[in-house]
Image (cartoon, rainbow, N blue to C red; front, side):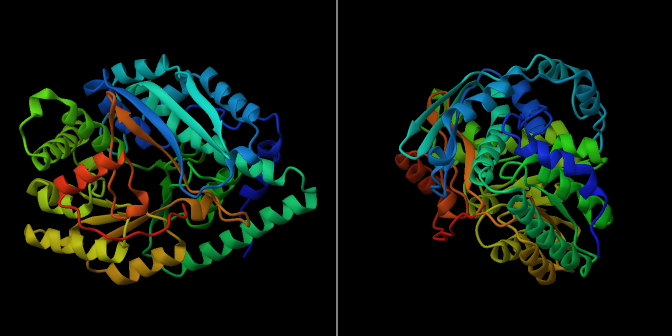
Length: 437
């Protein structure tokens, strides 16, 4: 089987993506869709919240030994010059696949004037400290493009000394792996999946090639991409709902609010979680009703979330821990609320490979609906080792945020605050799986 015409269409972009003077981020739409859906809620309800987003290199890759600081600054400075164009805003205005007129004119006008704030960058040994500070509605737009920049520079600098033949070999291996994935997925026609790989991609050109190929080769199974620019370019559905950022920041706000002093920490945590759920459903209704459960541990969510979430929401997203165990817990949760799990869906999105997606599909088909958001294994599976990095909201109004996760390797926050949240959430999980993506 030969891959599609996307090879020819993106050949030029591949060449551009490795040119040392070519901008990595060329559009503010080159980001994940959930930045816009979350962003509207943040803009309308939390516009006065001061946040700090910080880079965390979970794999300890020697970033500053590979990426010259001047190159990183150049790319970040270029992003600060970008603005949304009229055609890009027109695309967002017409995005109504999930609910009518998703983005209001007030939010679109905010985006029209969006300018990303300054950043703080300095070297620390063979790593980088990279922070973004300011008001939440604006600062949050740094996360995805900054991660994409760090990743692409990391791989550019690894291969820039290689010959053209050696670079072509890297792409050839990636194409062969992609071909094998397509063959596997085609054997299971009930599997549906999406590209979630913008943040840790090998490069823009490669993600563009992968998305274009999947659209042509698996048109009935490939649902879309989280990358808004590529969704617009390829006529695909922009995929995504919300991320850990919302409950992390809102919980930190609650713990810093004097009005909550005297309340048990567990009650404060539930209050923050309920505010996220109610605010989200109030804004988007059933159309985007996929609940992310693991910010403070999925056990806490399943124990404390309102029954209306089990009854009225489409489903949940699994993003850490053992996905098979999670599926069983979700099924039990629905049954406990008198809901038929087969009418709900789990979006599996944690370090997925095509093989793992297949195994999850075989385990849960007929029992609960599933779809898959595959990231690094789609957009950075060539022959160089991916880097596990995140940029997360580290502080809100001067207070440490916390993410517990269902995998202790993904936990974030100041140690004393992490312990406080664990106690509040009744967190007893001991899963500690190394992060590979």
